[in-house]
Length: 475
Image (cartoon, rainbow, N blue to C red; front, side, top):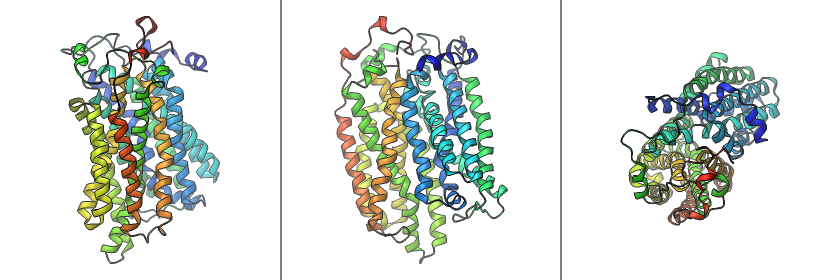
């Protein structure tokens, strides 16, 4: 399968065609990565049209919600499956493949919506689009780390920030498109829905065409450094002085045999499960809170919920850059102690005093969600520290299965608890408390896992003769 895919890569997409010439400015690489991540980050902007889909396709919120859960599951599975292929063939081929799957997925999804065929929406957006998400998410990671060996946290934070911030661009764009194609849809009204299936289908088509253009920019501008390149003034020997940072290399096949890989899997699973708990219930929680303080006015409550979700998107994006960059200073293990240790304290405060004040609720949730985003952006640098750059993209792809698992388990836990407490729209602060304390427990497990992380044993290191290329063509 891998050999067939390698042969299918056109020559103009090959790695040897994108080796940077002397004097190339490495700061041109983050914009290329952002061009992909900002587009696939649209998956975070589904709330704009989710309820419109339930009406136009006569489906339940649970059914439509599963389409997007399926996309996240496919993200993890495809990144695991194609991770080594991405490393071997380079970022241009990977970005082109990601753009193809993502755009085709949106178009097939549009066909499903327009014809009322739910299975086509699942196939298009969920499966085909999900594959594009996975390949696109990991496509620039190893390249960024090689261009920024001195600041890997900063580099991956800049790119993965785009995935978290994709909703900030997609949400208003989707609202304007729906209002243009359906005159009854009001993007300024939080409760407005587009009943026309054709309006939603046309929105998908326009998004697909726009994303094809922007992702092509990333495909055309991405470059890889020559072997053994290093930035001016950077001394690789200084890496040996940092805790947990190796100058050796571990293959993807060996990485999954190490306890460190599975400790990081648990860390990512716990952090994501808890973060998704906030993302899933942020809008309903703030609506319940505002409904009580606004004298039962559901319109005010809905508007507050929508605004709050927008604020969380900003902190989700900002946390990916700020906290990941901070990890270059205090270390990856240290920053995850912040994400998990401070995070569990904040969750406990949210459960106990969060409903006492709007300001307290918003501030606690915003910082928590910044930790959630930071955890995503920092994990590639953590992998680079422990396993080296040899096949870090492929290792990252395997680790993202934790995201897939958390994308299913997190909502099941939170929604299961809330379903036992009463009907949506009637819940009080007390109803959210058990779910939040479960998140505290998850973060505690993740914190213990992080504290157990040690350097990878030398028995897993690759011998020099085994490393045929920096990207691991022997995998």
